Amino acid sequence: MQNFRNRTPTHYALRSDVEIFLGHCVDSNLALCTISTYRQSLERLGNWMQVFYPEAHSVTDLRPAHLQQFRRHLREDSATYGHEISLRTQAKYLAIVRSLLRFYTIEARLEVMSREQIKLPKAEDKEATRSIQPDEVAALLDQPDPAKPWGLRDRALIAVLSSTGFRVSELCALDRRELRTDLMGRQARLPITVGHGRRTAYLDERAQGYLLEYLGSRSDKYPALFIRHKPGKSADQDDSQHRLTRQMVDRLLAKYARRAALSVLPSANSFRARMARDGIVPGAARPVS
Image 1 (cartoon, rainbow, N blue to C red):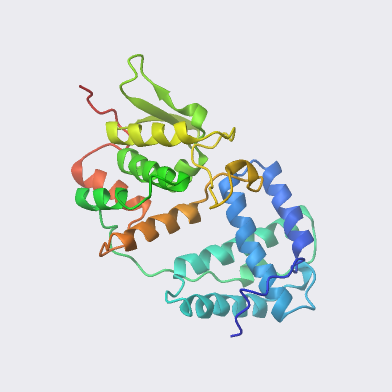
Image 2: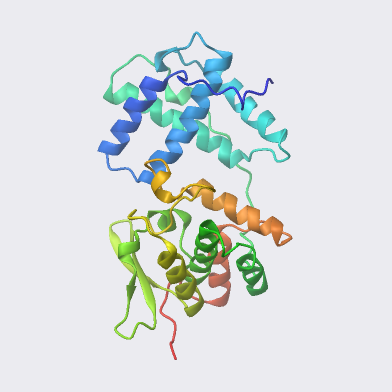
C-alpha cells in the first residue's frame, strides 16, 4: 500500500466530526492522556482517508470496507519500519473508532454505520510479563543524557517507575504539586487517584534524587510532573499540551532498552512484575536511614 507518512493534509477527512467528538470527551471529564490518544489515532485515520478516500468528508461516509483497509494499512505501514503493529494496538485504533461511532449514534443521533460492524481482533494469549532485573534497571538509568532536559526527565521517569510500579496512565496524570516530602525531607511521596480512591506511593532515595534534580532544572510553570521537551525549544515555546502521553513513555523505554542492548524491551508492567516477584507492594513506604 502507498506510503503517505509525508503527505499529511492540513485539513484531514472527518476533522470537524473528530473535533466535536473530542470536545464531548473533554466535557465528559475523560483523562487528558486518553483524549490525546484519541486525537492521535483519529487524526491518523483522517489523514489516511483524505489520501485514499477523499470523497469521504463526514463520519456518515465511513464504511466497514474503509476500516478493513485502514487496518491493513496499519500493518503494512508499520512493517516497512521493521516492526509489525501488534494485534493489541490494531484493536486500540478500531476501539477508538467504535467510540466515535457510538457518540454520533447515541448523542448526535446521526445515521452512521453500526459500531458492531467493526470487529476487534483478539490478541493471542501472551506469556506472563517478564519482570525487569535490577541490573537492567541500572543499565536503563545509564542511558539518558543528564546534560539535556529530556535526559534528566527520562532518568527520573525510569527511576520513579522502578520505585513505585506506577501504571503509565498514572504516571502521565501526575502533577508536580502533588509531590510531598516528610518533615525531615528524607522521603518523597506521590498521592495518586485509582478509581474512586486515592493512595500514596513512596519514592526510594534514588528516584527522589533524580526527580528533584529534574524538577529543579525546570523554569516553566506547567503543572505536569513530566512534560515534553523538544530539542532547540524551551517548554514555553512548545504547543499548548505539554504532558507526556503513554505512547511517548513506551517509546522512550524502548529507545533506552535498545541502547542498553537489553534482550527484551521493557514496559511499565515489567517494573510491576518485578515487585510482584519480590513481594513488594507498588509504592509502599521504604525504610529510611
